[in-house]
Length: 219
Image (cartoon, rainbow, N blue to C red; front, top):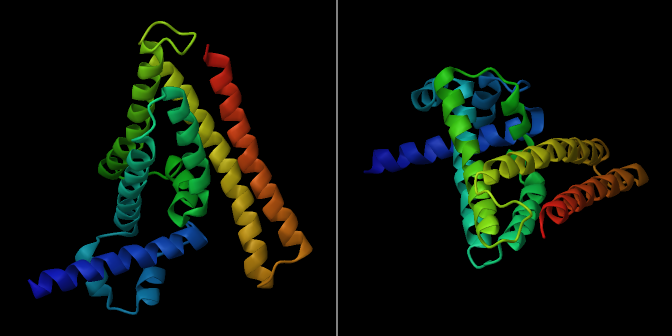
């Protein structure tokens, strides 16, 4: 039992360390040796738990995605109105940019992963599509949208999540610019404050855009 517990702690330590490096330097900018050096443990210990950097990265995303789904379940559970659920989902989606792991998720779209790992990631990300499709189906069923056919839920969910993901990537760039400015100066200069304002402005733009979309499809 002690060995298992120790092994679990080591595994989690690797995941946490890798997340910090990925969030700071990106997936491409982080090597397996970087992770090993920062951990300060033997190479063999790391490779006992993970065969590659890619495997660690997928585990980081998997672990964090479970936390994201728990947030969604908790925050949407007490909202009865499907339209309000869409608004809340948008707010949560845009604001997770300040959680380190979500600043590296855009990289998952252009990295060439092994087929097994790509399937794991695609299956995870598809969960958001399923959640949104159910919300749109409920909205159509209650006659809250201009669409009558329940089959339209799939199209609406695709447009909605694709728009959010595109805007999220732009917001990530704004956040990283502001974050880099703070790291470089170790204090908030006028330039830093300007970048932070831009970041907040872009988040608001995204929320305004999703609200406009909801207004266009709602009765």
